[in-house]
Length: 396
Ligand SMILES: [Zn+2]
Image (cartoon, rainbow, N blue to C red; front, side, top):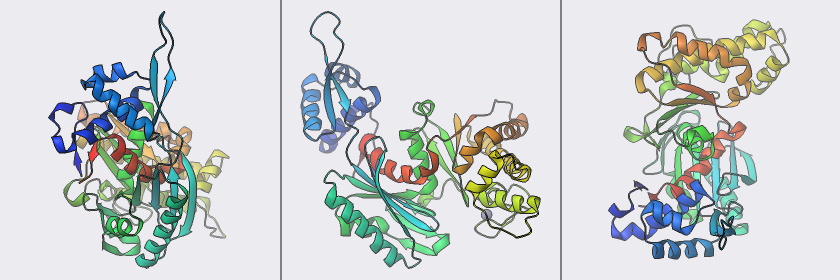
């Protein structure tokens, strides 16, 4: 896959120019709809006849449609809009215990979903996923690609899951495996990277124009996705963004996935918050609760639950201030169930960030809660397909 700059149509090589021009027009309609052919031509510097040809093609493919604009005296202009309805992508969210396979439309709305448990035997998991995808493709003829979000180290370039610690999967060419069975293009990325992409394409409106931001995905573990200059920054072999394992201090309430009690993940993940709650609530029955329940308890006024969340937010803020010092992003977005607890934790989080940003001498980045809800990873998986569609990722 090769990235191109959408604003510079004229430098594209001739073998891919048709494809790129199509992406440019589609992207302008997506960003500026309703928009006229003349405006697209003016803004992209593509010839009016080229724009018209592409628009016809996109209309025939059912991706855009025409509406009548407001008349300013003469004939009302014909404007173009994105046809959001209709299946276009399949997202596969491989979680820590279950897989979600879902179909989505151009604006990331989930239309149909199946959920099943993960089998540690990757061949069995692969078979369940490909059966589900094939069934979806049979009933939805418009599917253009499959995106997969993985809880581990991924080489997005080759579509290989390099290491998924939870299931001890190593060097799994999952994109190739699924492509050969299903016959559709497959993209794969790490869950936090995919979530960052979802935030860029489907998330908060204030993020649309931000070129550099960090997404912090707080779940059982803690991952980060870095968007640098409007694209996911992968680093060598996809290893960038492993800030969950930066050292924060000693004596965390839990260990990180790799067994250390000094990592950010061990201080600021959902597991850390639950361990704090277990200690504070003196739960004699040692009842296991989920993080979702912990947030509910805190909203209901449970003191121990609130304290557990605030302490976790403090460490979350500490880590974010460290990232901000090193990378100076325009914004930081916190995703996962913790985003739902924002009214309870935001003050503590922001004060931890600003207290620890003093030496930097610059104001800290704006920190927001994600608006993607509980489906962040699935939205991420769908975004891998949508970004390819809109961002001018030229298929290799
Ligand atoms: Zn660690």
